[in-house]
Every structure is written in C-alpha cells, then in structure tokens.
Image 1: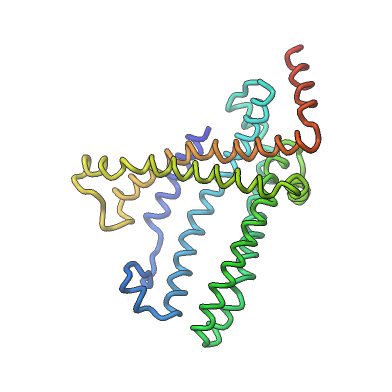
Image 2 (image 1 turned 180 degrees about the vertical axis):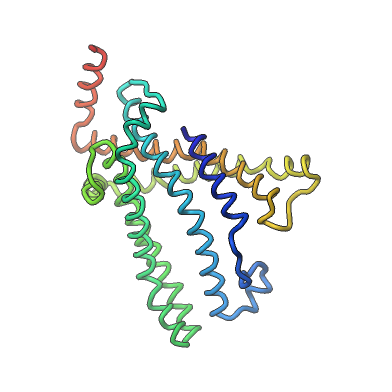
Length: 281
C-alpha cells in the first residue's frame, strides 16, 4: 500500500517540478545571499515557500490515503486479525473527506501560529524599517516555531481518532487534545524519535543515488536540478524513502493513540474482549 501511494504521488510531483515556472530571484550561492537586500531575501524566501507548498499539497494527498489505510491495518493487527489492501481501502474510503479536512485544518493551525509570530516583523519590513523588521521577524519566527510544535503534538492523535472512532474533524481535534493532555513531553519524544528514524532511513536510501547515477549516465549529478535525469533519480529515492517512512509515521501515531487510550480508558480490556470474540467466530 505504501509503495502504491509513494509511486503515485512522486510521479505527479516529478512532472509538476519539471514544468513548474521558475522565478529569477533565487539566491543560490553564499555570495548572492551576502549581497542581497532584505527585500530580495524575503522575495526569494517567498518563491521557496511557494515551491514547498506545491510539493506539500501533492504529498498531502498521498499522506491522507496512506494514513487512513495504514491506521485500519494497525488497528486490525492489534487484534491479531489480517487485513487485505481491499479491506483497508473499503474501510478507509468513506473517511477520506473527513481525513482531508483534518489534514488541512492542522497545518493551517500550525502555519497560523508561525504567521502570528512573524507578522509584526514583516509589517516593519513593509513599512521600510528593514533591519529592525528582519530582527523582529527572526525572534517572532522562533516563538512561532515553538507554538507550532506545541500545536503539532497537541493534535497529533486526531487522525486515528477520526478513523477509528468515526468522529468529525473538530471532535477528533478535541479528542486528541484530551488524550495528549498530561503526556505532551512523552508523545513529543516518541514523535521526534520516529522523525529521526525516518530521516536516517531517507539518508541511507539516498547514499547510493550518486554512484548509481554516475554508472548509468557518466555524470555524478546534473547542473540543472529540473532536468529529467536529476528528477528521475530524485523521484526514485523519494519513492523508496516514502515507502518505508509512511508505515513508520502512520503506524507510530496509531499505536500512540491506542497506548494513550489503554493508559486512560482501559482500552486493553475492550481489545482483549474483541479479540476473544473474533477467535470464537
């Protein structure tokens, strides 16, 4: 399932990246960055954020499908019950619109916290006080980052709550807030550990990309990052990484959700009863 989702989303992302219009204000070298004015830095940052947003939307669609299906798989696995891809899709499909809404609301909340932190500094830059504005933007960005991380963990268990409890978007957010309360630091540590594991996997997968590209094309890399050669090798690497990363992140979140319910609501008793009923049948 992860491979199918990764191939589909990465194929679309590769084509979009190949034909995406590119601006002329990118700051690609240290010399260009050093000589740029604050306004040029902000303009280049805006173009970079636009590029990130484009690829993020494509990845978001894949994450919605993968998270929905893999949450179903993990919930069945806890009961010792096998599930096919067809069964997982049948269970996940009715919840995809709600899951899409949730995956849009949470990033908006996180970006909102970051925007609130950086807004005063950006206003000063727009008013002409560029140096003071950049300093305030940096400080506000750090504060916004802290707030964004706090919100991320607070609502990190909303997706499994939406899938397994059949709740709406806002109810799932409140459910996650309730489950995370009092365990924020522990959940934060586990999520960071999962993120580091995914980063390690992605790094290991990317290591042989250069030598393989050199063996096939005779070049260690393309000077044009938007060339088909560079994009294909990057896409293959990203597909393998996503295939491994999606089960780690989605599975970790689903298991954290169940763990919190076991600690707070004795879910283990219900799971044991459900497993016994399943074996009896």
